[in-house]
Image (cartoon, rainbow, N blue to C red):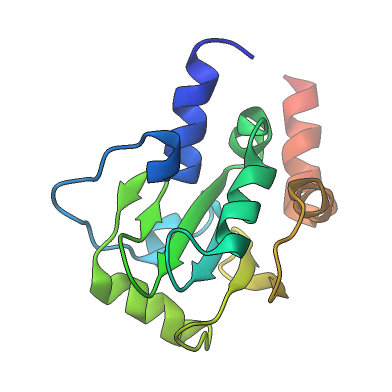
Length: 153
């Protein structure tokens, strides 16, 4: 892993546990801004130190290139504490709107993979191995087209 990889991972995963400082002003987060450009991995948890969130983050360690190659952003949505999208703090109103949009009850843990088209492709109430998520993404028609286009270049 090169020198920039740990920094990039902290931006992707967006966690204080990886030494990412808090953002002074949380930003609004609108999933529509990411439609057709990013896949979103929402991880809902009660708090930043919830064991399932910690496990989900740990499973992402070492997969910086895979996240980037698949245009996948890690979004942690917390009941308490600072929710983050791509390493930047998001405001509480945006976190609440995401929770409501996906029907996630306060105190619940959930993983939701959203495709570039904005629709949920996978939901789980337990951490999901990153390799499993990558395999699912790689089977998506849009991803297949992206890989073919990249191979032609």
